[in-house]
Image: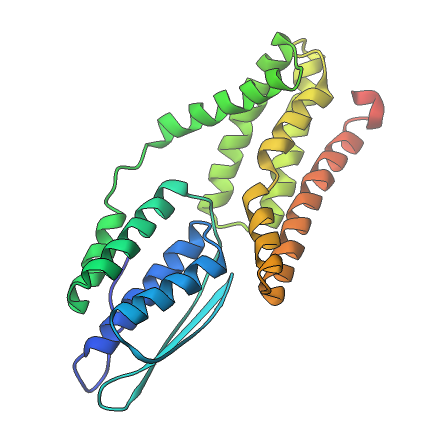
Length: 267
């Protein structure tokens, strides 16, 4: 991941440039890790107050950020970037929040901020060989908790493993969640039907419900309602529409698979 400051042609970077570069990168990483727009705006406000930035203003949505501030010589500086997508990463959010508190309390030199932000991404990340089995175990536990049998849990293991692999491939090619949800549930439903027919499960619907429960965008849905309640109607409405589409794609993927494999009789 590149955290290279924006190059300023014709002059050296001053304090305002360095602060804006840090704040832009911080905001982008926070939104991509699943933070709410309200959290990001509050963090930007506190950082700007800690460094006594002049005429600091920001426009933040779930997919776009614009920052502007005035330097000591009276010049206005602007930064902007787009957000390509978000994946919930609670550990990264925790480290980013800790960094924000540290920056506001200690106000280190602006030129040190990008290095401090870079250190957040040097934290230990569990390899896929650990995270993928953990996801499969979570799927299986949910199946048992909602009343699935041992055979259903077995089918869930097979199905969840395939789904995790499919999503890794789709993420590699940066396929949007709206499309990947439909493809993921299509594959999950097909494998579930075949697994039940082969005797690995008792109830195909139980396995499909388990997979869909784990794939429903719950945290983004909570963020959407949070934005609406706090008066950020534009961002809340956009998030709500996106979450609704992602959820509908889950149903569409299941419907397409059931229709392809014989309709309701395939259950």
